[in-house]
Length: 346
Image (cartoon, rainbow, N blue to C red; front, side, top):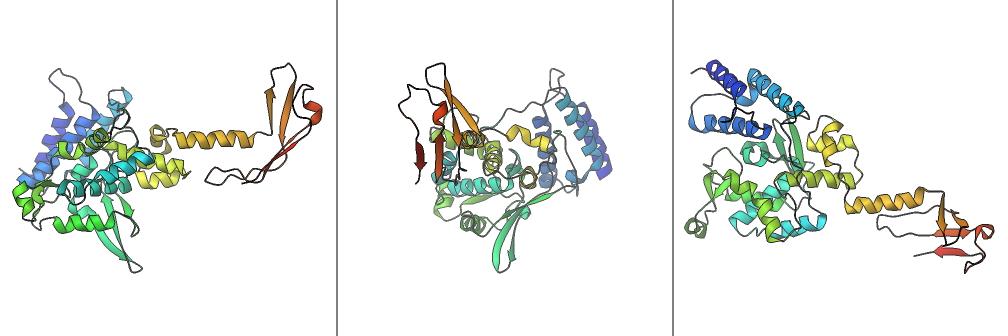
C-alpha cells in the first residue's frame, strides 16, 4: 500500500468515525486514535509514513474536532492544579532510587517545563528531548512537534521548544534516567519497568514503551497516596499547575503563551483560576487602592479613614512605614479616640 492510498483510507476512516450508537466520539478519543495509529505504523510496518505531516488527513480531523467543539460535544473537564505545597509533597514522594520513582520524577519535571497536555508524555519520543551547551553550561530542551490549537482542532507543521535550564533540580535525574535507558530501546522516551529479577541485575527499563494507563496514573496515584483534597488529579493537572503558577507570578499573557503553546489569549481563560495566594494579593490591592474607606461604628454617623502616605507592600505581604490619620471632625463623639496617628513600622 502506498502512502497516498493509506492517507485516503485514513481520511475516510476518520470522516466516518462513530461509536456503536452512531454518535460522534469526543475529541480526546479521536486524538488518541490518531496517536495510536501513528505509533502502530511506526512500530509494526515498514511504511515510511509520518501522519503528523499528512496535510490532507489533518484537514479532515481538524474540521471534525472544530465541529465537535462548536456543538458542545468536546467538553473537557477541568484538571485540578496543585498548590505549591501539594507539588512539593508530590515531587518529594518520588523515590529516585527506584525505576518507577525515577521515571515519575523526570516525567513530572519535563511535563511541567513543557506545560504538557495530558496525552503528550505518552507520545514523547527520545529524539525530542535534546541536550545542548550554551555559554559553557548544559541545557536540555523538549521539542513538541504538533499540538491541538485553541479551537480544539489540530495544526500541522508547527512546533515549539521548551527549555530546561542548568539550574533545574531535574537535570541530574534526567541524566540518570538517560543512562539507565537501554541503547536498543524503542523511539519513545518513557519505557516500561523491568521485572524485579532484572532490576536486581541493574537493568531498570524495558526496550518497549511504558503502558499508557501506567504513566497517566502517576499524578492520580500520588494524590491519593498523599491524601490530597477531592479533585481531578490527572496528567493535565501539571499543565494547569504550571499555567496557574505563572499567573500568580503576574507573568503577562504573551509570555505564558510562549510556554504553554496557546495561539490566542482565549485559550488561556480556562486556566485563569483564582488561587488563595492570588485572592490574598487582590484583597491587599483592594485595600491599598481605595482613597477613602467608610466604616459604621454602630451609630448613624460615619467617619472616613484617609490614607496620608503610600503603602509599600513587599512580596512577604508585610506593611512598612504606613500611617493612617483620622480626621477628628468626622469621628463620632462616642468614639474612644479623639485624634490619633497610627504608625505601623516593622
